[in-house]
Image 1: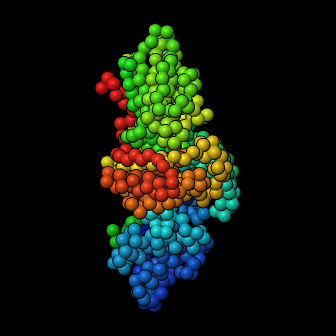
Image 2: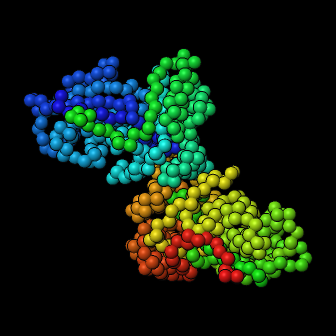
Image 3: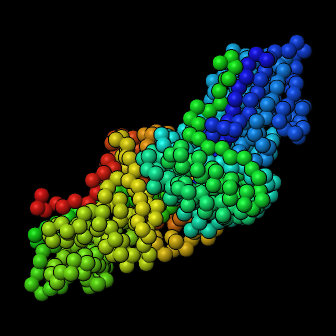
Length: 310
Length: 310
């Protein structure tokens, strides 16, 4: 293959910004490799690491839908072979389908000589992800592509703010081997909220945004609360309260559900604490006989990138 | 009188931040003058400009309640004479009772040799204002005291962020001679909001906060919308839609209800536009046979101040 691109996992919602906020991690992530072929068709030649669960049909896979849309936009009748190395679990709440869409678009764009900027790739990627989730949500795909913490304000037209990321902010994430269906995670949510809850959540999100600009750790920590989804969704994640408490008592700024779960993430102010918090969270799941994987590191401010040619 | 303090009018809610945001104006405002007396009592010697509507009882007036609480906190048995020059209309949605409480606390603090910092005056002031409104709301009193645009996150304990104010931000405000009762303005509001509305309003407020930090006029303009109160409260203000449209077509960034109304304010990026917008808004009310007063100027970033001795 001629070009490979890596796109990272991401934490949607980021606790206080339901459907509005997302943050990029350094790992795990997806690797997509592409090359031209001779038969004028976008083709998935193989998918590794998905346990055979994803469609090999290029019209029904989030990796290839953006690529087909890009070629159409460019009026190009090129064929592209696509190899997806799925290096992260499906349905984990870590933006797995977003990572595939982003890595596919990034790799194809490089192969084609970069006809689009990163920002210009967004509409193609969102359409690819909409295929997977049934509706347009950019809170995984956009931070996955651009890196950092992104506040998404509107889709038509797309308006967003790339928020400042404090130098000393580290994530921990544990993916427990539990099944949470996005559909169920949506259906469990209340349809309506009281004036008080609405105002409180507005204060939490705007306080978090101000906390990032002010680099105010206390304000960031106190703002990472969710009254809209977490009180309901946590019941779908066995042991959530115990994991939450273990993260806080290990020194995390705060802890919450990543996207619609079951992954649980935390933020800390040092690499050492982030490592300890990840280990503690995984250990807490383990004591409940739940296996899982853990990740920790600095917030990814670079986003998706070309890994070959390097 | 030995000491005088001025406290400005303020715009509560600031459209996108219901109960959370407030902004200080330069005028109008209240002037409170104080001096020691010989009879160990806080006494209202006179109130000018209220048309006899406010209580002269020091236990029942928002100007004097904070002063009495300050003396109690200091264990001082001093008597203080208080003169309130009410230079702004009552029940106007411009934070009239907050201005009285702030000016009273500022003047008394100066008279007493500044035992409290401005920030330390806040609890006394909020208790004074709670007497007037029946509950603690700092979105007028705190910007009135400190100046600028303030995001209030919590009351117990008080947590807030003094947001950056772009250099080129100007207000226009028109107070139409209409009666809107705060109680009615509260009762007209929905009790519940849909998930979609809740998320949209979270995006608007957080976008506004980011817009101030980024000094992004377009983001500020697009974020000044309210889905929680304005769609209902505007029906209590005759001609609101016409006034709104006249402000926008005169070049305002946006326009909305000040507090619970009936005053209507707008923001602009130049002094000239702010003046034109104020005149246009007042003219529009006038064409509907509604008289009123207009104000315009730079956002007040200084807050309440001692005016005598100067």
